[in-house]
Image (cartoon, rainbow, N blue to C red; front, side, top):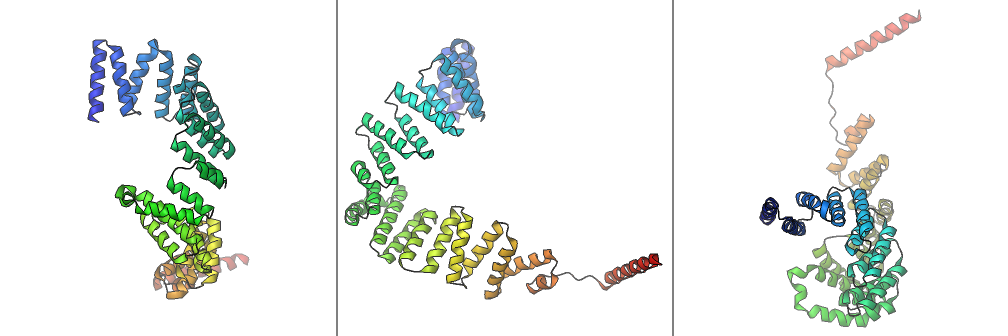
Length: 392
C-alpha cells in the first residue's frame, strides 16, 4: 500500500511539472500493482482523452469493469476496436468480458480472431478450450488443443490438457499417447484397468520425498486417491478404504470421497454403508431429491441408524415437507428420547395446536390462572345468553 501511495505522489508531482508522459508511465505502473485503483484509472483516462483515443476507450472500459458495468465496458472496447481492429489486447478484453457475462459463443469469436492474428497467443488457446468445454463441445475443444500443440509442440501443459480432454471422452488410447503428467497418466491407466502399469508409476510417485512436504499436500491427496482407486480395481476393499480416509484427512470429506466410499462398500456388498455414502455424495452436490432416495435406501437397510433418520428429517424440512420431516424426527425420538428431536416435535405440535402431543414430547405449556379461566368462562356464558336472547 505504501508503494502505491508513493507512486501516486510521484505521478502527482509529474503532473504539477507538466510531464504528462512520465505521469502516464507511473499511473500505468500503479495499475499493474492494483488493477482496481479507480483514481489511477480516472487519471489515465483524462490523460489519454486528447492524445490517444484508443487507450482512452480501453481505460474507460477498465473503469467500468471495476464498477461492474460490464455492458458499458463492452461498448468501450468495441469503440477501441473500431480504431484498432487488430489489437490483441482489446480483443482479449472483449473476449473475457463476453465470457464473464455468459456470452460464450461471442467470446469464442474474439479468441479465434486473436489466434488468427497471432498464433503464439497461448492464453487464447486455453480460453477457447475452456469455452468449448463450458458449451459441451468436446470435439471443438480437442481441435483447439491439437492446434495449440501444432504451434507449441513441446508444451507439456497442452499435452496434458489434450490428454484430459481425451480422457473425458473415454478415449484412453489417444490420452495415453500424449499425456506427460504422471498423476494424470496413472488416473487414465486405472480407468482403463491397466493396473500393473499404474502400479509401476504409483511406486515411483511414492518414493519421491518431495511428495510428503507441506507445500505438496494437494499432490499427496491425489496420490492417496489414486491408491484407493488401484486397490478398488484389485478388489482390495479394506486397503482402498484406508487410502480414502488418508485422502479425507487432507482434503476433508467431499463429494468425491463419499462417492469412492459408496463404490467400495458396493463392492463389499454392504447395502447400508453404500447407500449412506451415496446419500452424502448427493447432499454435498446439492442434489437433495437423490440424497433422499439414497438415505431412504440406507434407512430400509438399517431402520435404527439415528444419523440416517436425522439426515432424512433435515432433507425433508429443507424441501418444505414438514409433516414428512416430523415422521423421521418421531423415529429419532423413539430410539432414545433424543432431546433435540423432542424439542422440534414439541414446537411443531404446539404450532399445530395439538397441546397434548406437544406436552408428550416435552413442550412446557404455560397454564392460565384460575381467575383468567373464570373470566373467560363468564365471557363465553354471556355470549351464549346474548345469542339465545336475540332468537326470542
